[in-house]
Image 1: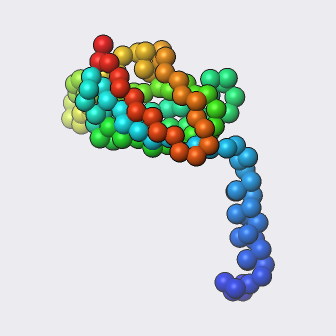
Image 2: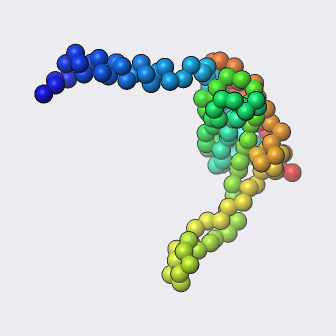
Image 3: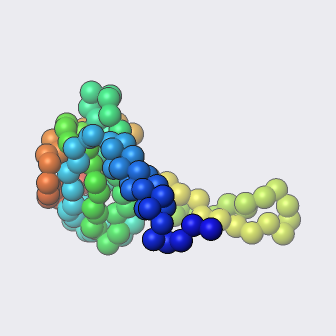
Length: 136
């Protein structure tokens, strides 16, 4: 039986940590800020950062009470902001006693999400960026 203080176990854990830390040589920046739509903080939504050049990984996070924070790879990013709103109810199954779920639609204009015009040059370290979106 291997004890907690076993050199083999310690070496194994150290090896795993080195591999995990070495998996990404990509520099990252912390991006945070406030998102408003029509002057009002977005209650719930999502923000996504996608490399403009198409290489690298995508990052993002939730927007809650207007605030967001995300770890994003350094470089020029295309930014997409989605702000879903409930527009109705829908049966979850095709049965008479089916429970209902919310039916969503996008409340932010397409120029902020599916046809985004937003970009951000992310640098290493902290990046503060507020987004004031027009409702139309």
